Length: 341
Image (tube, rainbow, N blue to C red; front, side):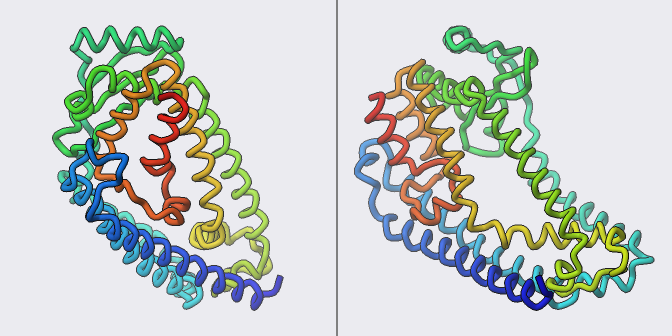
């Protein structure tokens, strides 16, 4: 492949990528706003108009920020590739340590946000003290054959109103943690149903499958990088001249940077495949939960969680197909109701 052909291919796919992402976000904004004035029929008795509009406004704000991020990232990408930014860096390769220090310093400046942005991510875990709920959960774990080292409550309410439950660890070290917001919001039967969904992911080996797929994909990409770093057109096609064209093995760092920058442009249109796989597993976990608990409690829990997490009930279908690992609330709940209700 010639330098010119690869450059043209990159520019074409970059334009397509930006256009598709702008189109998806713009559609999403219009779609959500068009349905902002009314709660979907399936939820009219369970979610207030104010909560629905709050979720819609939150979603629109995120999409607008996404559009701005696309613009900025595209400008940066073009500047450091086709406009020669990475090549201005090659001239100062003897001072690489200085530029590494600048990057590290920039990271340290970001750490100034630690008290308000990062610290809330690290929450305190305390043992679950509700004996009734503990007994219900332990009964569910025994029913599905799941052993846990402990049941804990995380003080997430100090930083967020979102509710969730998660499982961590492997083997005998597995733990279950509930957000305190989840325990405050849901009834015991609903908490049990939500946990059953998470247990479904473990029992159906979704976690292991995701790890295996991730390892396989990363191995394939690294093998591709190993090939591309030996190709002069890979560098020159992105506006960068290899440091030593006759010994391309000395361009590992540059090849890695270029690869990581260009990869999203070439893989965007594959995003729906990942979404399809993720949604399949979510449906399987829902079915597992419905088998071991009352599906109606899972439905009522999901409705409350969608409301508390400010998740829009009316996502734009094409946008959702690219970005949402979970199906729309209506689709997911209707499937649960039709199959297990």
